[in-house]
Length: 434
Image (cartoon, rainbow, N blue to C red; front, side, top):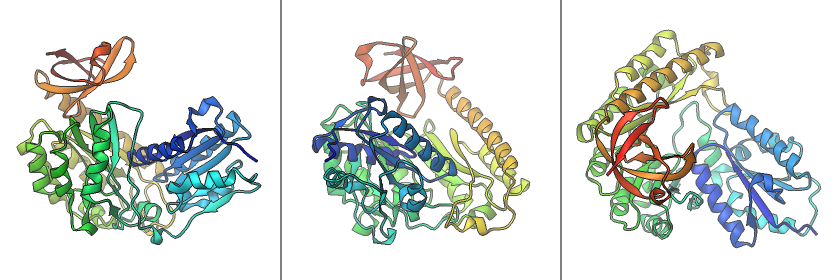
């Protein structure tokens, strides 16, 4: 009989995955397992996967090999989006013992405990039909006493032509506001000072409960014990003016939005089956900046989508250049199985995709620099973190400007008012602490 005692986790992908891994790890610890690092020769490896790009799939393979090199006798489980989408492909990876799709990944402890009673001789797959996934499993990350990622929504009902997430995570679902606030109160009793709200389609929260994301932030804004709430990412068509108004007047929600754009070309937005037009996106940015001129706005953009001519790419480039936003997350388009986009005509050469991605990343760096320069001399609250590097410590202002100062243990996990003095050669702000 196998006796598992130590478990290690590796997470690929988004903040949502990190919150779920943490929730699963908490279940293992309650079950008597010691959570350890990969290098500490665990008996069980749990790899929580992403499948947004081909690179994520390849990385999963590399992590399995790493696990097997550390402990050839260990039990290796692969869960998450890649496990839901391509379980048979994962089963060809040498050394994988268990593959759990969306239906079963939160039951992994039960599977492992059952397998303690027998020696697995082949890879076990529990995939399930994604259409049958209806239950919402709340989770939040632990380990970083400064910041916690709280999952409040999962799945997506959209059908964007480039995206596999609805196939990997199922339809949109969320907990009730009452239950979400209860989970947030648990976090408030920990040392975490900031809570980041995460989800696949965050603005869709509560739709099937006759509630709304606006209703949720109204309730959370009155929750004592948490200094800050940050909204991780929200679709422009779901980012209503009342949400923007609420954040502008909020006691706890910080002036920082991350709003997916994907393309500044009206034609490409249609081909992507996005649910908004360019003018909607523009109006959201203008409304935010009208009420919160100092607000940080991040943008997701995809480069190299089929049909992206030079003219259409420059539409995106010029639109972003003129838009009052702070930084971009640039994704180079990659073909994904079971999505519609690969059927579209006029595929973009991969070399051109890379060149255009580089152009937008350079523009993003310029945008970020300009945003930082616009904050010189201003005063903001900063939440300082425990990271220490060359006797320096770091933190983020409420509007997501990264600062550094001389390390001082007493500042860790505290919020201090600072004045942003100057930008150093690393692109970070030096500050005066009040």
